[in-house]
Image (cartoon, rainbow, N blue to C red; front, side):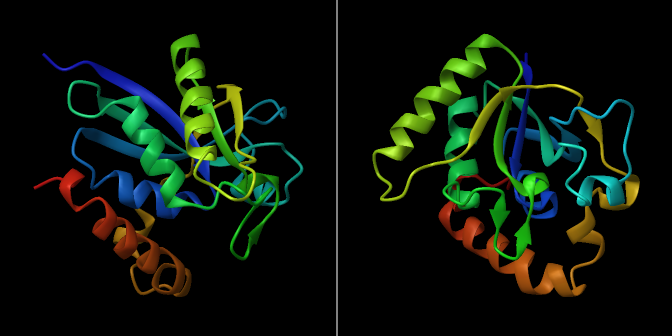
Length: 178
């Protein structure tokens, strides 16, 4: 019997993170969304891109904890982006692109702190990943879901998402769905 859990992570543009995690064994689905903002209701993508809502682009991952652990997900997360750049991933700049782990419970909070400390030991620059309780989460608009799969030749997808995806596929070939 599977034990389905959730993880919510921000690592820059959600298209990259969602695309890769949907290929990982044990992940039932990865959904692009927004979280962490103080603005009530559900702001639009345009409002979130302004950086004024406080929301980050995130991916909500539903996973089978008997196949992949939260710890393994965090290790993948830390190699999927640069956790040492504050409010930036490549050309994407602003608090909406921050590196963040939104924990769902105290166990995830402790694991996130421990994994972050362990990863920090092997890094020369300081990790700036925010570790915060999950607040104000909502799914992104439908057109953001499976964006790369539907638009592989779109400029950003071809120049940014595809190279990241290819690198992650090589690094985690043993973790991909068959």
